[in-house]
Length: 292
Image (cartoon, rainbow, N blue to C red):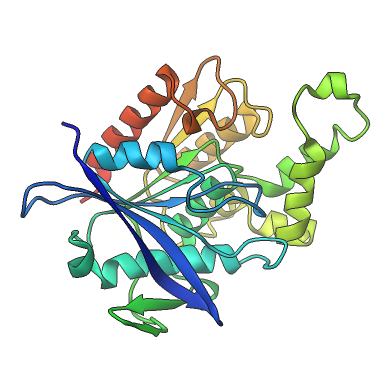
């Protein structure tokens, strides 16, 4: 069934004087129907993009019966790690504290993110309740407040072509520094490396924020079920990076479903097409299987 979707712009939190905005997509389902909530985290190499970047698939998910909160958050070059993940954790707490207003069940929440947003969604999924992720104030009713009690735990994470190992991707991008434009095609590794520098500031911080490192070293609070969508022709995130995380996640006792999409590249689901339709359907199935 395809539902009509309403949209609302709202404030979910604040960092200092900065209001943090979200775009709330809600399907017009029958009264009393329970809908899963997806908090969507945009990509942009940790320094660009906004809550409308994933609009195409966010609208499709909402029309299929999910509530979708697409969020803005702090990123480089004006803000550095862990500003983004503190804001994302606050958005989870916002949904839980305002479920009545949103008309949703607070026990059923998924995080979804693409590219750098996939990395950030995974980081919050693993470590949403550490101290550094409790610094963003949350909108509770009509007031902004610190929330020291509500957990940012989610039921599952959907990671679309995520940069799971920022340091490895930074080094990978730098390996193309001396290549010719013909070797690169339309890929611009300098832009990606610049995004890493702008948000993380150092290679040590990139390594500390690596999902691969966290899983290998046991540096996590929880291991939520993960759907990882990997395009076969992705130059930004090589296939080996996602396969390596899938193995590490399984060895750590977690559940990670790696789905390889043939003959498509990075960001394919931002545009209409058969692969996008299949991806949205897979996201819906996974979320409905794992959200309470």
